Length: 338
Image 1 (cartoon, rainbow, N blue to C red):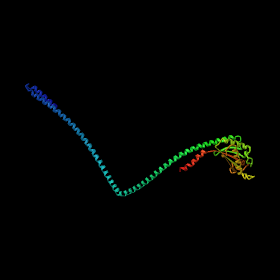
Image 2: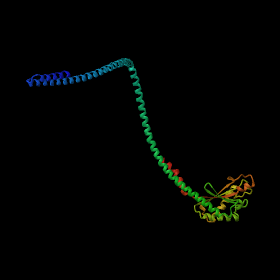
Image 3: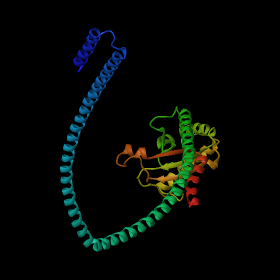
Image 4: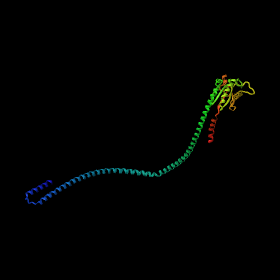
């Protein structure tokens, strides 16, 4: 088309030159306008061609997409059909199960009702037990609080008792040291100072104090008792018990005042008690007693052992008024609390 227009334009120009110069200029203008119109139509046609190509490509793409969508829909339809068949099967199974459950519902409901009644009864029983346990717990707590209070009271008394015992032990040790120091010139086989059961024992042999069968203390024994009395005068809180002991040999010369070893042990203890009170110890602090042959320190089977049993023991006990008060308080308070 472009070549044809160019040819026409050239021909028109040639004709114009060849024709007489009288050809009117209007004709030239018409040709020129026709050329311009032709060029414009050409451009419009090319534009429409390009637009048609673009629309064709777009339509082709849409067609391809529609084909893909159609394939996907076909596949989805197949899967949907399969799912529908499975769903129908499941529905059939569920329907059968429901029918079975419906047939057994009355019996199941009755069983559930029975189970519920059992559970309700058990719950009521457990609630009652819980109430009893709660009441018991409150009582136990009250008892525990009371026990704790009692324990604190007893601990306080125990502390007092331990303190009193410590003071008693201190007093007994001091007493033993004082007596041992006062009698250090006499100690040996005939005189011994020892501690036993929280008391101080001064054991004097018969040889130191008496002649055989006699109730009169020899001068050496009197000196020992005098020294002991001096030491005990400085211990006003000490009680003195004098015990006379013999062996098991029967008394050979009974008299109206002395029939047997028991009389002998008592009279010897009384004589020593008098000497101690003469030495300055208040009589109210001194007790005389005779134990005869019944508390031996050795078997009465040899002369040596019999000599050990023929002895006088002076038992010194610190007064334990505070300790006794504590012990008495501990023994009477629980009864009062009940």
